[in-house]
Amino acid sequence: MKLNKHLLVFNHIISHGEHKDGKYWLENLSAWHDLDGYTCFLGYKDLVMTIYFHNRFNFDYQDKQTLEKFHRIIERYELDAHE
Image (cartoon, rainbow, N blue to C red):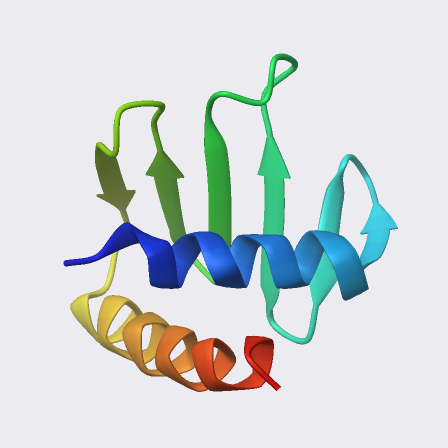
């Protein structure tokens, strides 16, 4: 899996989303980062994707269908971010 897709989505949400409660929200996705900016987070429903500094990542979710839907949303936003 290439993280550049997810980082494009993260950037898109931070740039165009509404800032609320320490996170940026755009449609059903949220994005936020830790204080130093080295760890980024993408959220969708019960899923949180953590993107670490050296191109490592982790998914935390309850329902596998949520993960599958998240991947489809990411693909759509990748296209939107390049327009």
